[in-house]
Length: 194
Image 1 (cartoon, rainbow, N blue to C red):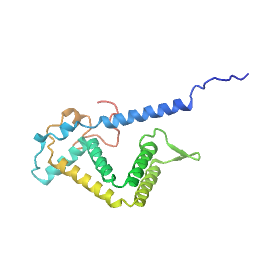
Image 2 (image 1 turned 90 degrees about the vertical axis):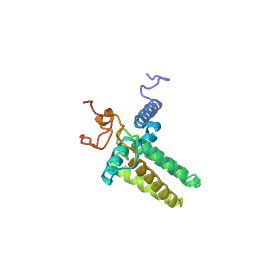
Image 3 (image 1 turned 45 degrees about the horizontal axis):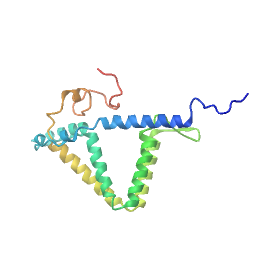
Image 4 (image 1 turned 180 degrees about the vertical axis):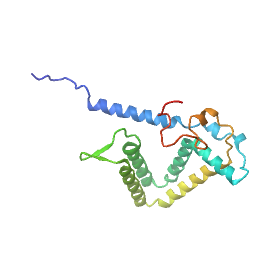
């Protein structure tokens, strides 16, 4: 006997909603590591380093502490540099969407024609495609200059911002890369607490 009108237990729409909710959770977790802009630009915390070793130490600690803020700044500069090249901007947005869905937000391995594709292969293919597509839009100089400006801003800010006002909880949780005793390579917040 056939039953018409029954809804299967796991519909494709429900699977899509689960994927979207997992993507939202991952984005929130990533943005959750962003530090307050007020803390980042606290003018009382700016002072030139005393020597080169102090500057390198500050850069390591600040990049670890403000990494999400720095990524947002660099991506904003890159986005602004592409405003005068609308085709490049469209290509950049499409490729960022491809990176998000095919590399960053994926929970399961990528399957093509019944074969599992390694993450390194996905990363290499996406990187090559991004570079080729952006080269085809003839905005290479804009992109390189924007990335250079972003890197210079990050290094200068990281070198002149003092690190003595960071909370001890952040150092103990392994969010800072300076003198952490953890082995690295893990995802923040995915391990057990000490």
